Image (tube, rainbow, N blue to C red):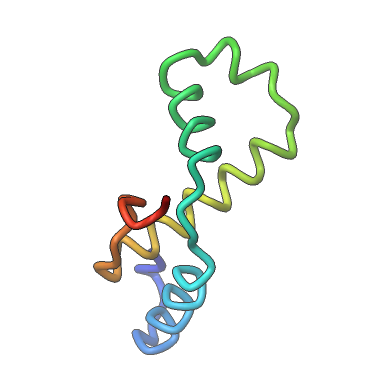
Length: 76
């Protein structure tokens, strides 16, 4: 995620810290699907939801980069 960081141990620490905040959220997955499939409806959402989606996607990407399961198959 932070390829311009000259200290790889710091990069790993930050990526791990971000990944540790990831918890699969079906509602955020629905918002992401809405963003992809119906951008006109997504544009009408509350800005707070859009910020939450950005944080969720960042944590998900960090978890995925570390090889963690982000599928949500264990959530039910």
